[in-house]
Length: 157
Image (tube, rainbow, N blue to C red; front, side, top):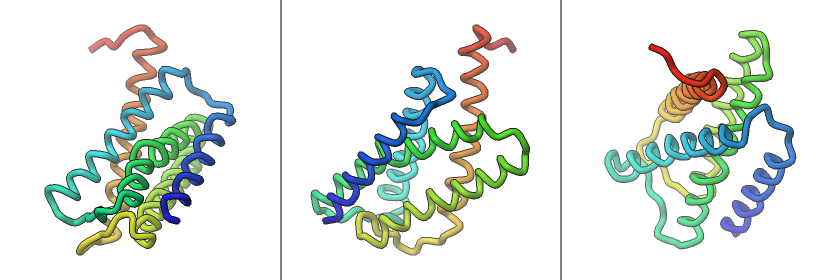
């Protein structure tokens, strides 16, 4: 049941992402997707293996659901965040966007906790909020760096 829910959610999110007109070159989408996936997968791995604050039940449907979320759902949401970040013009709107996506991503993480896909052990909500804030800010900086290289033909020190 949980796996079916996440398959539908991931396919729906992927479909909406594909249909949406984007401000990015296809290379940018691939690179931002990879960086987003890298950030969340490392966070998940550190919490699971090193800190032992995250448990992934040893049930194939939960493991596969978590895998889908790490490789599809969260990266799509993060690349979508970058798309909207480029569109918005004022700092207040960008700040509200960051806050909204932090709440969305934290909510998605805790939905997985409620559904049993991941189990947080001795977890504090501010840890998730802090991670998502840092991850989104890293993505913004990386996007600016990458766009400078991609569209201006190089990086000068």
